[in-house]
Structures are given as structure tokens and as C-alpha cells.
Image 1 (tube, rainbow, N blue to C red):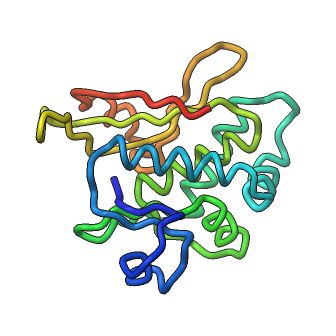
Image 2 (tube, rainbow, N blue to C red):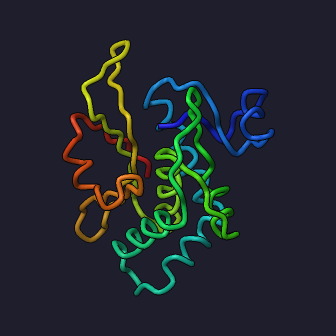
Length: 192
């Protein structure tokens, strides 16, 4: 999980982003803080037309009301149009999804980690009217200062027809089942 927020300003923010207020950078203080940043970034970005335009472009060939198809199309497009890269060693970065959507629309291949990908997919799902939640998972039983330590985050979208939640995790990709089998603890964070 990364350590940045799109609304922080100041010298720490300028050091990594050249003064951009679209990337939040902060010392990592645990999953609740990072998930809060991801949630806010997704909720704010769903309003940006670049996110909706990207979603419409991705889903343009699908039949109407094919909600699972929309979620899977968004997931596959994000998986194929981005590249995974970890955050700086001691900094948490979370990019604003609308900035990423603009990069993708311009043909750029953004380098993102699980926080960025979760925020982006959450914003895309919200922009097509879907319900989304964030899931943090731990692969080892680690506790620090009484707080469980989670090492990965991903989005889930709810199929309105069946009520089932669909895992959208480009980091795990085709190994999602294997990744889920290694989880020793998980926490669900509702978004909208």
C-alpha cells in the first residue's frame, strides 16, 4: 500500500510531484489512513468527466445493463493499460484517478501500485453507477501498536442482479484465486 493524497500541499508534496497537488504523499500510518485517502480520491474523481469518458470508451461495445461485463471490461482495460510499480521506500503515494484517466486517454502507460489501481477502479465503477468497496488483506499475522498490518488492497464491485461481489485486482491478475487463498486476515471498507 502506498503513502500519498491528492489534496496535500507543501514541500513534502513538491519533492515527489514537482508541486502537483494531484498526488498525495504522506508517511505511512496504517490502512485506515490510506483507505480514507483512496476512498476520497475515488469519490471525488467519479465526478470528473475524464473518468466517465474513459469508462464509456472501455464499455462501448457491451450490451445495455451488462453490469458484470462493465466491471470486467474496466478491470481488463486497467490491467492492460497500466504498469505495476511500487511506491518510494518510505512514502505512501495515492494518485487522483482523474489524473490517471487523463494519462490513459492520452495513450500514456501510468506506473501504479495497488493503492492507485484501487482508487482508479473504484472511481471507474462509481462513474458507471456501480457499488464498490475496498478490501485490505494481510498475508501474515502481523500487529504493530495493537493494529493489524495489511499489505495489499484491492477493489470489489457488486453485481446488482445477484448481489455478489466481484474482485477487481490487477496486481494479482490471473493469480487472484491463489492470492485470496494466502489471505490470513481481511477488512472491508465500504465506499458507495
